[in-house]
Image 1 (spheres, rainbow, N blue to C red):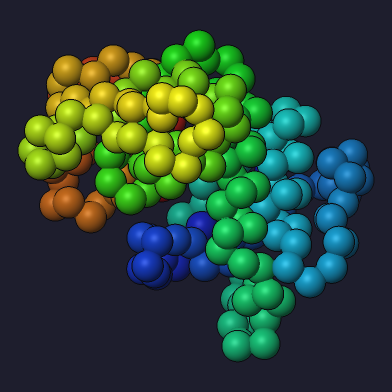
Image 2 (cartoon, rainbow, N blue to C red; image 1 turned 180 degrees about the horizontal axis):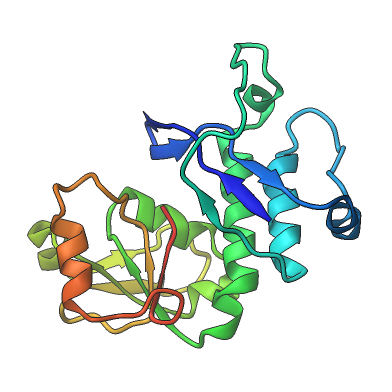
Amino acid sequence: MQVCSGDQVFTSHGPTVIMPTWFCSREWFDSIGKFDEGGKGVPEDLLFFYENLRKGGGTFRVDHCQLLYRYHSGAATHAVLEETIWKNRVRFLEERVLSHWSSFTIWNAGKQGRKLYRSLSATNQKKVVSFCDVDQSKITKGFYTHQESKDKPKPKIPIFHFTEAKPPFIICVKLDLTGGRFEENLNSLKLKEGVDYYHFS
């Protein structure tokens, strides 16, 4: 399977890829199960890609353009809600990664990290042993309280400096947006991607 990365654009959610393209054999396409034609608002490309991974498919990057798309305001992609994509991404993360971990740390005690925590199943919320960050005000506060929880007392998850937190990590920090500081911090821990951490941003 081949991925054409295309050009990048910056959105409110960070850098993204415009219209990624998958090339695969007809036989493999049929074995994946084709596209989910559930109708307007279904992220069929994303679901197809996840099913490819579930069935053992892989990807490799192509750094030159393979296709030219005509992008317009009436494109079907605009019917897919951001929240729908988020929920599918979280469920896939839980299935493929978190189901194999007994505990983990969320790297980012800010908005995105807290949103991920709240989106997790109750089982996976209980696996979150801490948040970590570099923001001293968040670290000084000491913990995040999950106010929406029905548990009594409400869960309080400690917040540590990233050097004091324990892997594995789910990283909710956008890449290339901190002038290299985040990447330096991550590299300083000598961790292995896919084992000690996964990016979710």
